[in-house]
Image 1: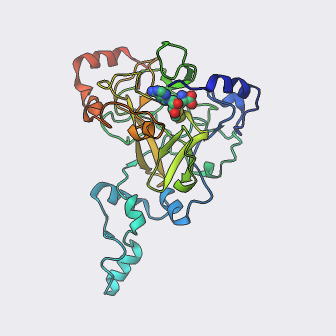
Image 2: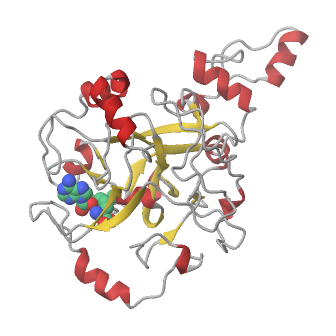
Image 3: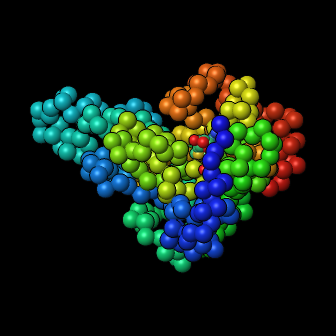
Length: 334
Ligand SMILES: C[S@@+](CC[C@H](N)C(=O)[O-])C[C@H]1O[C@@H](n2cnc3c(N)ncnc32)[C@H](O)[C@@H]1O
C-alpha cells in the first residue's frame, strides 16, 4: 500500500505552520498541518476520574510504585472488598484507599522516566495546557540496556535543556528508496546514530482522546487503554512517523522498536514509550508493529504472528563479543 501524501503535501507547503513554536525550532521535515507537541494534550471530554488516573493525580507516587512492582499495594483489593471495621483500618483506608475497578485497569503499568519533548526552552510559546507538566531532570548517563522503562534518561549529545533545541538520535526523512518501499513518497523515522537494545528512545506524544471520540480514519492512533486513544494525526511529535515493519523487514527480523506504556516516576503521568528491541544502525529506519488489527481494520490481511517472543531476545545480546567490538567502534552510539 502506498500513501497518497505527496500531492497533499504540495498543498500543505503553501500553508502556515500550525505549530505554536518558532518554525525554526521544528524538526526537519515537520509537516505544517501538524501541531508539534512537547507533551500530551487531553481531550476536554475525558471523564475527570480517568483524567486523574492518566495524569497520575489520584495517588502518591509511592502507591504507584508499590503496585507496579508487587501487584497491589497495602490498599489492595477493590473498593467493594474489606470494608474497614476498626478505627485503625479506617485510617489505613483513608491514607491508601483500595483501588476502584477503574484504577485496577491502570494498575500494573511500570514506572519509568519520561523522555521530554525535544523542545524545552523558555522561548517556546506552546499554548499546550499540559506543557506546564514539569520535565524530569536531564541526565547524560546512558540507560540500562536491559531494563525498560529505563531508570535514567539519555540524549546522545547531552545538551543542556536550556539550549534551544535538543538533538535527537533520529530524524524524519522523506522515503525515496528503495523503489519497493511500501511507504515510498511518505515519511519515516530514521536513526542518526547507533541505537542499542533497551534504549528508551522517545515517547509517542499526541492528543489523548476518549474512545468514543477517536477518529476511525486516523492513521496515527495507538491505544492507551480500553477507554483512551493517542491520536497524533493533527498534533504530535516524532513518534507519529514510525512506520510498520511489514514489507520493509522480514517477519523473522521483526520490528526494531516496540511501544510500551509506563508511568512517569516524577509526575505519575501515563506515557507511551518507544523501546529499542534490536540494534539500529545510523541511517536505518525505525520500525514497529502496528498489530494485525490495525491492518485488518483497513481491509489488509497481514501474515505472521501478532507478536513473536524472539523479536525482543536481542535485549539479552549485550555480551555478544562481535557486538561489543561494534560498540567500541560506534563511539557516539547510545
Ligand atoms: C503512523 S503513520 C506512519 C507515518 C507516515 N508514513 C507519515 O508520513 O505520516 C501510519 C501510516 O503509514 C503507512 N504505513 C506505515 N507502515 C507501512 C507499511 N509497512 N506498509 C504500508 N504502509 C505503511 C500507512 O498508510 C499507515 O496508515
